[in-house]
Amino acid sequence: MLKIRPHHILCMKAYIGKGYSQKFNENMEKIIKTLKENVNQQVEVVFGLDDICSKCPNNMRNGLCKSQDKVENIDLKVSKHFEIKNGKYTYKDLQYKVYSNINEDKFMDICKSCEWHYITNCKDLNLKK
Image (tube, rainbow, N blue to C red):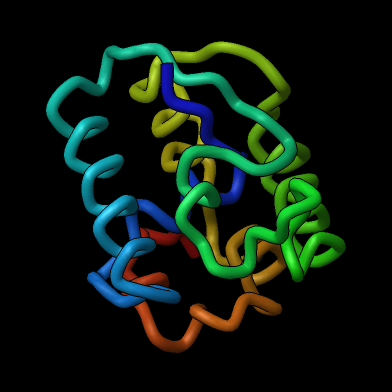
């Protein structure tokens, strides 16, 4: 079962093939492909390093991210805005929770501090005004 942090639900939809390293990109693309092929599969939402983080060069040996405080804050905002908690969900249910409720204000609250915000397709997430 894939483990996904809350904010990565947004990152996967906006991902355009750019990332921290080749290993990271390959891993992200594999995870996205797996989830697209079966949106009904169960994933586990975790508030910590997940399967996407596993290939990120910011993943430090002690099990934390170099940007730990920032990503924890982003995860908490996603959790609050879309009522996502630790536990098991189908990927389809997670997508529904986020993308049927996202709007520009929520998006900016969650993503404005992200370094990828201006590089990726984040603005194309079908935001409601």
